[in-house]
Amino acid sequence: MTTVVFISADGEERSEVEAPSGRRLLEVAQADGQPLEGTCEGQMACSTCHVIVDAADFAKLPRATEMEEDLLDLASHVTRYSRLACQIELSDDIDRLTVRMPAGSRNMQGR
Ligand code: FES
Image 1 (spheres, rainbow, N blue to C red):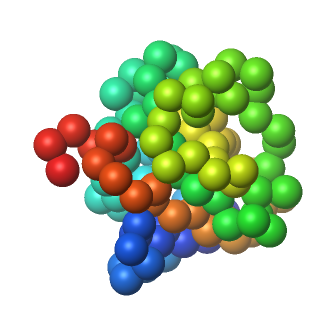
Image 2: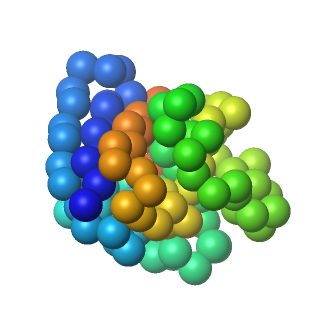
C-alpha cells in the first residue's frame, strides 16, 4: 500500500488516501474526486492528467519516458517536477507520494 497525499492547486485542500501497489495514480486521483480529467485514459494522447510531484518523491519515481516528456510540453503550469498521473504506477517502493494539482483549468474541462 502507498499513502497518496493530494494537495489542491492553491494549497488549501489536502486529501490523504491509501492505495494498493499496481494502481495508477490517475485512477487513485479520480476515485478521490481530484480534478484530473485524464481524457485519453492513459493512452498517451492528452495531458489532462498532469500533476506536480513533491520534489523528494519525484526522485523516487522511475524516469518519465520521452513520450511522456513530449506530452508534458502540451500541459500548462509545467514544472521540473511535473508528471502524467496515468504513467505513475504505485509500488511498495514508494510508501508515501505527495502530489499537487497544477494551477489553471486545463486539467478538467468546465472547471
Ligand atoms: S490520461 Fe491522457 S496522457 Fe494521461
